Length: 159
Length: 159
DNA sequence: GCACAAACAGGAAATATTCTTATGTTCGCG
DNA sequence: CGCGAACATAAGAATATTTCCTGTTTGTGC
Image 1 (cartoon, rainbow over the protein chains, first blue to last red):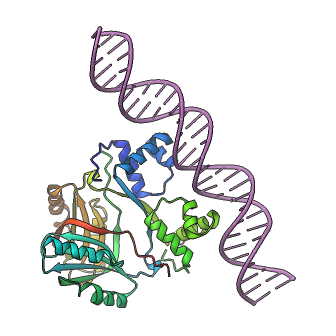
Image 2 (image 1 turned 45 degrees about the horizontal axis):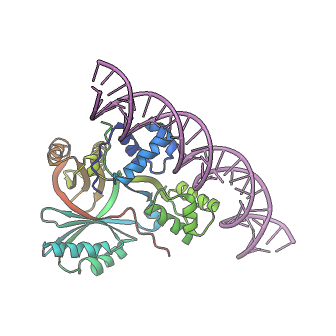
């Protein structure tokens, strides 16, 4: 669903509002978009169908759930053959502590966003699950001290 | 709202469901949690109030909105004095292309997640907004080739 | 140029569903 | 036995969703 779609100004207003406030009611959304409820809902459904809206999620407070640690890991592999890349991706996909995995260009092959309950459990995760994984050449990790900006998605220009 | 809160198994079920599916109806959520609607809604409201649920967001398809490029930028500053760190954070907060800004330990001071319409607009953003910013010592950027995992938030263990 | 039909998008009204509040009821505990 | 906490039931209000209708635009044939 790569969704090439002609998005007009009303669609963008809707998308921006839903990205900011995913549980806004359709009535309020329609008001913001300058529509009545039915056509607004039709547009939302069409945007979902087309894959422009991929999903909806609650953003949770990690510390409240016992996750006090967030780490970025820069991983380099020994082989960059497609099969080996896939194998690594499959491996990290199966690890719940790994929340994001992005393949990069340059010397670093992957950057991972990892969460953990505390430093100790992160260390044990690192040495038991990540560093010894097949084909891993090097792992450099950096602890997050604080996050000053964490906006979802992309800017939605009114246009 | 750092929210220390005793979360029982039902709360965790609710949080997990909302993190996965932010627009689930309270009726369905209650069914999953093994409750009727009213106590389920009370719990959701309490979790929102306590800051365990911070917000809700639609996840949008970036390419559909014309954002084909995602980049990680590793930034080092000349001074790590708190005022200088804050100044840099304030600066990137004002840049819509920068979606995330995390302060790290070690040699790299910040990692930024940046989106752009294309390589050209990213280059111009980089050279006009980021590299020449006050106190910036070095910026290393890595283009995202593909993202194989992009899960929201944290794992929610049933416990 | 003009009439017409088809396709499209929005609005109004009606219905179904959900949310929300008020009011009992049960259970565990002191 | 009384109390408080948490849930269920029930009712009313708000919302979502469907259906149908209207206006506009587009393209076509005369």
